[in-house]
Every structure is written in structure tokens, then in C-alpha cells.
Image 1 (tube, chains in turn purple, yellow):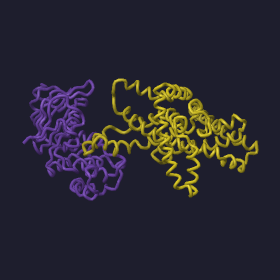
Image 2: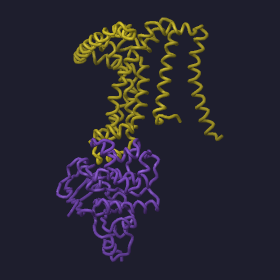
Image 3: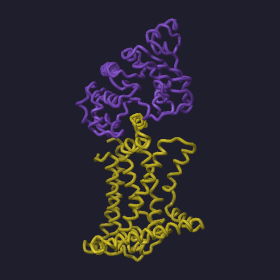
Length: 241
Length: 297
């Protein structure tokens, strides 16, 4: 069953346009969206989250149209570039933020987040300020915050772009585990083929505001003739020969 | 030391020396005219000085509230929204800073001199009179106590209307509000838009995201701007002279100082000015404390 269905989506941000995006992501699928900087990936994610207006087209989650819904009503967990942790709040207050906003008590809010906190092994960080966390810890806390309210869809915008190589590998392994454990449909934006491979086998490639192709990473590597995909996946394919 | 460091550090020392010299001159002048603690106490405990001090604090605190109520939404709009004429509006906000203060007083005088301004003045005065009666009736209940009696004395002599406290507040507001708007705008600009986006996906409405995330993060800059604007408001003189004059019921610290000078009472003017300097010094200390995230650097 399709979890997220995007049909003929058009977006405009200043002079930049995202055109005619059609995308189908299955339930519990881990989908990686790749593309060079400025290709429109983050804009597309923001449109899915409801953070920017859609010019034309529609977005459905299961059978529910969410194109015009407020971000708070979409049940989407969003981790932006650089994590977006609130620096004036502690780790605990960041993680329980959504539950507190929904009117829950601190105890109930903590209970809701217990699963994610345990899985991400961050219980020892709860009393700390987010300002003093390492890159890896920051990403784990941001992830726990996004998962706290059991979202239907998890959106990760370059979640490991600001960490070193060993931490990147560690976080990617955690992301895969989380996806398996929570069975949550995930969209993960990245630039690197290795990063994409470590978390999923299904990718989509964007360039210049268009979603060029989607499919299994191995198939795209072997069969795609699109120069942008060949450049991004860095392989010698039939298209490159 | 490098030549550049030599030059810049000397300039800094010269500037600080100039300020210290100015303050020291006031003190030396008072010493040379035998103004001791007894004389200072006498001047500061006179009814006129106490009344001017009260009126300055009362009006400037209301001005501060109005400034914050303006600067927070205006600063946010300027920092977050791009609209046609944004650059023009952004520049226009600074107009009160660059206008000679006396021009603001003249403009107020001109506005309330028009038929429309006359009607507005009448409505405001009516409201202020009603407010004054209410405040007095509440205060009269506490007349027996020492604090209550003190307030009754202050409030019974105050004129709240356009030619009184309201006029003073308008002058203070117009001269100072731009400083706080500037500060609030730059404080909001330093809060990445990312944070609001995340808050929206975590269940906040736009208003709630502003209240729970943006405002707390911009708080120090806004408070610093508010204190700066308040310190500026308490020292406003030019527009007050033009718009409300120097009558007994509208005397604030700066006009009181000027009246002392006018009759050649330099010592009294200097004592009052020292109090104003002390308030300004405390304000600027708080500004730096808040600007640096409530710790000293």
C-alpha cells in the first residue's frame, strides 16, 4: 500500500521552480532522495511537511489528502539540516516538546518518548543542554524528538552531513535499525552514494527542480542514461559509455 | 605593538578619557561650590525633584511597555517577511532616529492643532480624566498608610491628558521606539527559520512557535533594545519643551534640570543630572549583561 503519493506537484520559491513531481513511497519503505545542492530536495521535503505552499498538484498520506493541511496536522516527523534542536531547551525538553505542546504532563510526555530514547541510547543525555552535545548525539536527540509522537512519516534532511565518517556510519546504522523497529516510512535526503546504500536500496534522483528517476540503486547505476544520475552515482554505465 | 593596534587603542583610551573627564567635571564643579552630601540630600528631597523623578519613571515605564508592544511585532515582520517596499519600510523605521527631536514635538503640535487632531485630543483627554478619577478613588482607600499617602500626593498633582503625561509618553515613545525595533529585528534575524519550521511540525501553531521558540531565543536582544530605548526615553527633552512645556505638573527630570539652569541654579541642575547619569549607567550595564546572554564578558 502506498504511504505517500505525490501527484504532479509544482512549487515556486523565488525564481526557482520544482516541476511536475510524481512520487509513490510504499508503507514502511526507506526512500533516499539524492541530488546535487540546489536541486530542490529540501523544498520538496518542506512541501511534504506543509512548510511551503504548493502551487499545483496533490500530496496524499495513505488515502488522506494533506496538500492543504497545517504542518501540525500531518503526523510527520521532520529533522532539518543541522538538526534544528532548540538551544534554549534541555535534551529532555526538546524530546518532550511535541507532547507538552499537545497538553500532556511531563511524566506522560516522557513515557511517550521512552521507546525512542531507549533505542537511541540517549537516556544519559536527558538533563544536558543541547548546546554541548557532539554531532552524533545531536542527531540522535533530533531523531528521538521527531519520533516522540509516533509520526506516520519520518523526513530526514541531510541528517549526517555535519558529522565525521565513523559517526556517519554509526548514525546510518541507527537509522536503519529505527526504521526496522518502528516500521516507519522514511525519506532521507543525502548527496553520497555510500550513505544512500548504507540505509536503503531505493532512491530517487532530483536535479534542477525535477525528479529525474526513482528505482533500485543498483538498477539506476546500471541502466540510467541520465547524465546527472551518472554523475551523482559515479558509475560507468551504458549511458556513460 | 603594531601601528594599527597602537592607533586604535589610543583612540579608545582617548574616548573613554573624554567620558570620564565629563563625569569628573560635574563632581569637581560641585566640590568647588561646596556642594556636599547635606546639600545634595536637600536638593534631591525637594518636592519638585521627587515629583519630576516620579513622573519620569512613571511615563518612561509606560513608554517602555508601548515600545515593546510595537518593537516585537514590527521587528519580527521586518526580519521574517519579504514584501514590496521592504527596503523602503526598513529605512523608514529609522526616521525618528535621524529627525531632530524638536521636529517630532513640532509635528505633534501640528497634528493636535488640526480639526481631526482636536477631536482625537478630546477623546484621549476624556478617557484620561476618567482614568484619573478611577485611580484616585482606588488610592484614596489607601490614604491612611504611608505608601498610599505618598501615591495620593503624586497622583493628585498629575495631569494624564494630551497636555500632560500622555503628551510626555508620546514624545518619549516617538524618540525612542526605533532603537528597540532595530534591536528586535536583529535579534529575530539571529534565530534561524529552521527552528520555527520544526516547531510547526511538532504540533505548534504559528503563534505558539513564536511564543515557545522564537521569542525566548530573541529575548536577550529585545530586552537589551528595550532598556536602551527606555534610557533614551527618560532623557527626552527637545520635543517635550515644544509639545508639553515646563509647567509644574509636566516636569520630568530633563525639563526640571533645564528650569534650574534657567534661574542660574547650576548646582541643583548638576545634582539632578548626576541622578540621570546614574540611571543611564545602570541601564547600559543591563544592556551589556543581556546582550551577552546574561553573563559578563
